[in-house]
Image 1 (cartoon, rainbow, N blue to C red):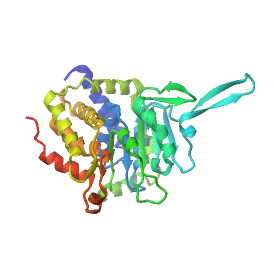
Image 2 (image 1 turned 30 degrees about the horizontal axis):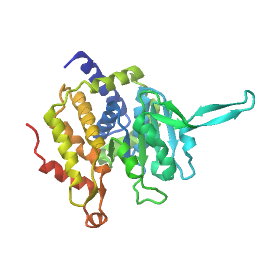
Image 3 (image 1 turned 120 degrees about the horizontal axis):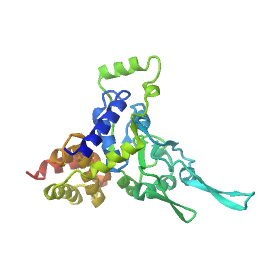
Image 4 (image 1 turned 60 degrees about the vertical axis):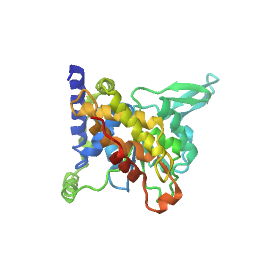
Amino acid sequence: MTNELALARDVFHRIAANVELVMRGQHASVRKLLAAFASGGHVLLEDFPGTGKTTLAKAVARSIDAQFKRVQFTPDLLPSDILGVSVFNQRDQAFHFHAGPVFANILLADEINRASPRTQSALLEAMGEGQVSVDGERRELTEPFFVIATQNPVEFRGTYPLPEAQMDRFAVQFTLGYVAAAEEVAILTAQAQEHPLERIKPCASLAEALTLKHAVKQVRVSEELKRYMVDLAAATRTAKGVQLGASPRASLALMKMAQALALFDGQEFAGPEQVQEMAVPVIAHRLVMEPQARFSGLTARGVVEEILKQTPVPA
């Protein structure tokens, strides 16, 4: 392993260990979230209230010495509350732009599906292209730009389902789930006096975070593995019960996530095991199921898991 990759891997382990001081029993979730950060993707956390979605986002933000902003999405939130607005100054008779919270390195979009579709769509350009257009002027976002969005299950009251185009902008979606009883007891003990989040200090600089992102791109991917990932995504487009399959953006996200995991695992080449680990969280949320398929109990996750079983793995 080259020196650059070894240094980047050290940065990952340092951040992961720091986050896990707060997020007990969530090693797999921390690994996925940091893989998305390192590969330049965005994360959607969907789970029931109180499972630690916001805490995980805050722990990652506090572990990196970067600019962090949080937006609490509500039904009355406007696009300008996220992007910013131009205000007329009487003194110099000119408009001055006041940047919104989207101009940050790490943005926590909390309960994103409680805002109206119009406000949700304000993030589309920012997440897809790293820029926003306000008052006809294009403004570049700072690098890195990482969105961690949380949402409650769509069956909950007062939620608006995210449109397909918005879901496709997220590199990965996963749930935290409930931890084991022993871990939950440890959480109660840790928070008896104060929240462990208060003791978290940055353990990686912004420059180190950028080095981590650059190192991921150096992890090699064979032509056979690329074809394997394309085959997985393509199979969703003809799968029974699927109305809309995975786009080429899904294949690209899967490759980048596999590269990040390979780096974390100390490998210079991405392998099938990393692809298989990330296939469901990268692909499933992009699928639109046919109504009759949903009623019969067929899920997007189940479709991807079946495709993984049926698709030949490269040697």
